[in-house]
Image 1 (cartoon, rainbow, N blue to C red):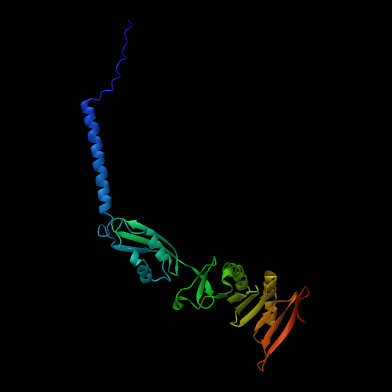
Image 2 (image 1 turned 180 degrees about the vertical axis):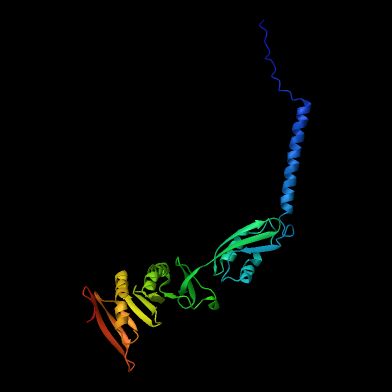
Length: 271
């Protein structure tokens, strides 16, 4: 009779008692440490624990009032050091008209620091706004707008183009003894300038919609001749002509004298 052979029993690897106890102890310590960390984290979530006591403001502030900035973020800094909503603080500060950017950081153990960069005004915009060099518009309180700034006007969606055009011609006109006090573009795209010369006389200039650079260069070229030959202050120069211009000046009786000038290749002469 054939005898059945039993397969040898596969024994589980034996773990020594000291090693097992070590593993169990390690797991217990890890669980305790995790629980303690969660407990500590929860304990620090309340604003009463490590409250913010100082809100510092860094940056060169020329137009922005510190009190306005503090009031804007006050509702968002009542939390604790770890729980304060940094994004909400930043957005509240950037909601102020004069604020360009804000960076917010914590300083241990109870301080929040706001680093503020102000808007840099280029000119007034219309009756109640300010425009920056990159064409950004903002609208501060009326008493915060300097009347010494030049005035720019035009459609809001053209603010960037108007600011760029102003910057492009400002130095050219300054070199010619003409300072821009106002500059505008109407809805048809026609440009106008209000200038003041070295003698303090005002001058309105009509440039129209086309050939802006060429017409401006014509003004710079002919203005010294007009100034030399004028019998009184000029009121307006209209450059919306192919090779000439029209000049308006006051007459003794109060009416306007309008004279055409040719600015062709032969030089500047009365038409």
